[in-house]
Image 1 (cartoon, one colour):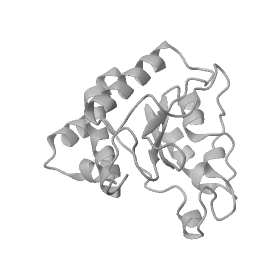
Image 2: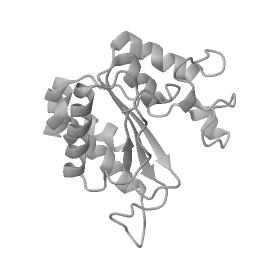
Image 3: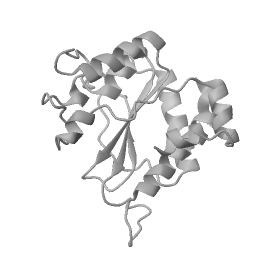
Image 4: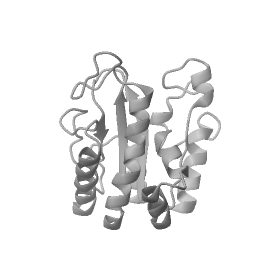
Length: 198
């Protein structure tokens, strides 16, 4: 939400500059019917949409099929799949080191964008997160891994904590919607200073 509102702010020179350089497509919610049913991961048909990206089924995971079809039409240079993690008390990035086509170009982009985000917003950190996949061992059913492989682009799963960010804790309020918004807003600056590398 913070990313979207900042991109829509015509008085924001950074956002306007970024939009002159890039086309940005936003899917605000992939799983609205599943959320309405109270599901954590599954859609109304009971499918975990983050495990449907390799071979989506238009009947039971049409959300994924539609988004991937649109990506095929436009191409993808960077993909960010935003999640919340209930176990790790940190903001962190799960990248695509284990995809078959991982190479030096993707590694350089990965390092550049990660370091720029930590510099722009210290609520992002690089020390804690999921273990990296071994070369060639990434699960290509997962959105970030499949999109990275399919388009040979940088593709991340970005995780935010449910309760608080332990490297910058807020004892009174924890991790809030406002902090989530600010993290999203900061991404505009990160992309603006990084985009020439693409």
